[in-house]
Image (cartoon, rainbow, N blue to C red):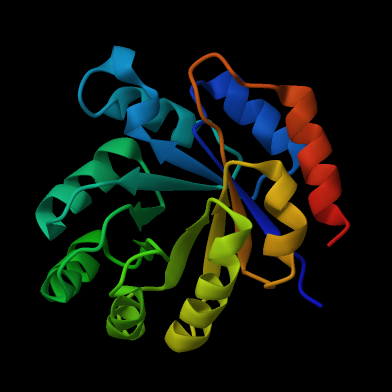
Length: 201
C-alpha cells in the first residue's frame, strides 16, 4: 500500500520550514496570507522559504487568484514548483496557465460542501493534476470520497484538526495537508507527534 505523503501549510519562516522537513514533510504549502508583515503577496518571504528547501521537498504556492496571468506571476515570484488554486477558477483559464507555468503541477481546491462540488470535480478531472479537499468535520468525509471517485485524480486532504487524521487516512488520499493556523502557534513537538501518527497509516 502506498504511503501517505505529507504537505504542511502555513509555515511562516525558513526555521519553521526546516522543522517541518525534519518532521518528514514531502511538500510545504506557501500561503501568502501567513505573512501579513510582508505586504500583500509576501513573495520575497515565500521565495526565501522555497529556495531554502532540500531538493526532495516540493514548495507549493497556495493562491486565491482567479486568472492564469496572476497565478503564473505569483508562482514565479514565490519560486514554487507547484500551485494550489484555493478557489475554483474558470476551466478556460487552464490552457493558458499550463502553457505559462511550463509543467509545474496544478492542484485544484474544491469545497466539498458546495452544491456544485460534483460538477466541479468532473470539470477539472481532465485539467488539474490533483484535487485538494478540506475536511473540517467528520461529516465531510463521505462528500470527499464521492469527489475523489468522480475526478479520478490524486487527492490532498486538508486538515486543521489532527484528530481527524485516522478518518481522513481511511480514504487513502495521495497526501494529507496539515494546515497550521494562527501566527505564533507553530509547535514543533506537536508536528513530530502528528507525523509519527501519520506513519502508522
